Length: 272
Ligand code: DGL
Image (cartoon, rainbow, N blue to C red; front, top):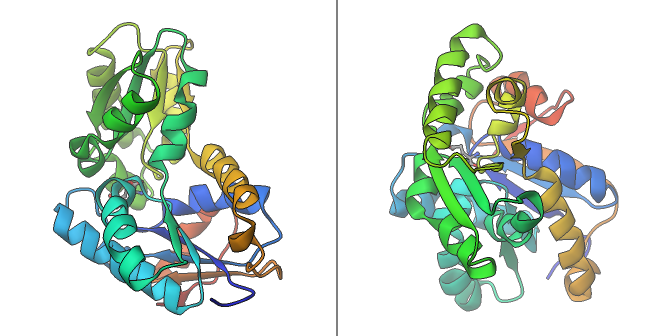
């Protein structure tokens, strides 16, 4: 295991930058490597086998870069690939290295955002079809009912920087209405895709005021703070030079053009 190891942050593309932003705010002291698999994204509609294969390749690349700890800052990869990587690949090939996802930390605290115990979950088809949120939330809170809505048009709209245009309104309203039609008592809507926080201004306009719209960045960051406190053996190997590197499997020029909307500042990425 390498001393001065960076923390790896992985997403299918840009969305994980919304999570990375919160992590870097709460844990600014560490070194990070972000990897976006832009060349093969969106992951949302790919099969289990494909998402697992792509995610494992990217995790192994981050291991090769010296990361002992990798965060899958992507709901689709967390839903479809994380368990197999944790149960099959890590114990045999990478003991001592860890991969964490975004679904469990979110499910753990979901009860604090609902009074009616009726929660809406909006995500990609992959995340919704995996039923990972249904299962994880049930494990912690059997009294909470979960209503899911897949929103397949949202990632393409956001990736093409059309999310604040009038043209996005139709698909925003369509999926929000479809979710609320499942139960009138939903009082918390989880944005279970790391791209969706960019739609917040539109979502706030469509959902009634009493609905808590929940994004994951701060939840995942707090959970990582907690994880590192509980795992000093991992924490003490982390580098503390405050370095952040950004890699993409796609075109770095295109990545840099889009990435600033997600991360809040201009980035200079490298080719994977
Ligand atoms: N950012 C990914 C997530 O959180 C979705 C994007 C994609 O479909 O690749 O699920």
